[in-house]
Amino acid sequence: MAPSGKRLNPWEFIVVRDEKKLRAMEGCRTYGSGMFKTATAAIVVALDSNLTDTWIADGAITAEHLLLAAEEQGLGACWCQVYRREGAEELIRELCGIPAELSVLCVISLGYKDEDRKNYDLEKLRYDKIHIEQY
Image 1 (cartoon, rainbow, N blue to C red):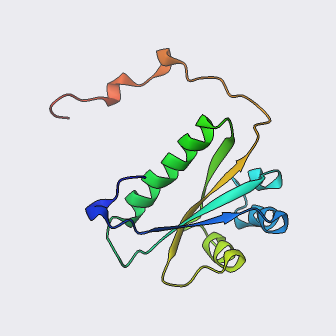
Image 2 (spheres, one colour):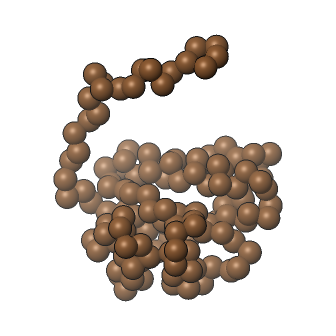
């Protein structure tokens, strides 16, 4: 359960396992949606943007929780931005029958990793971006 502004929980999740739909999702973006070629499932994160002005933050927090939960289960997961990406929201909305009153923020692809990425190099962290008390 992710936190949300005023505990309004404006999210709706659509779990997609249909292979035809998953492969079609690759067409939602020209770059950054190739993971749908091999994904075994996806979770569409849609929100009622009329319910609260914090819907984008609420959706991002809950999507991050989904990503962390997938990793904890040994799955590969990747965020695909849909909101305000030309044609992406329309395609996902059509594929999943999402009503007009919901905004589609992102789609989280799920599957098994075909590569393990290296951890971030802690020596390269930008500590100069951390400010104490004031900028």
